[in-house]
Length: 190
Image 1 (cartoon, one colour):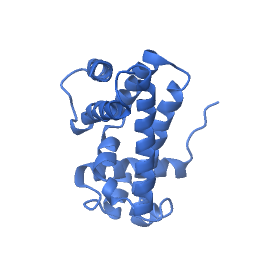
Image 2 (image 1 turned 180 degrees about the vertical axis):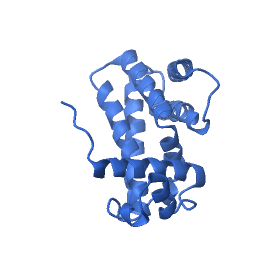
Image 3 (image 1 turned 120 degrees about the vertical axis):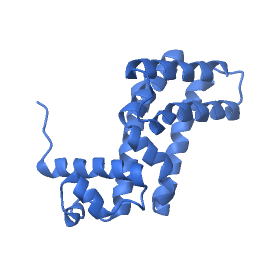
């Protein structure tokens, strides 16, 4: 039986969603705790029952995306070769559409993380890229690790770029398919 979120969990989710939206629109420094609280339908002090401060709220957003990216890697772990690569790309592009605003925050607000958290996020980012690079190694043995890594960075950048457009002008399924195909072709033929 599926568990429903507690009212406390629902408030936390509303706070995270509101923070994502406001950080995307106004930047970390342009969104105050009271703004986030108002958007979430809670009081400013209520936020502090869930998060120590605004920095902790930003860290929670980065952790949320990190968990989603880890889930993608876990999903493709049992797959091999081209199937693994195509699945990895398709799951990442789906995430880019589902979490468009969160990816924008992830890309644009990293510099505002507290230094220890920024180092932790960068380690995770390197590990995520290395997982793609390792997968690509068997498919592109003709390339060096540096070439494969550069291709992976470019492909992830392509997929994440959807975050900077609220509407891509195509039906979502068509846009996801097009971007996934472009990324796979770039990784395999670049």
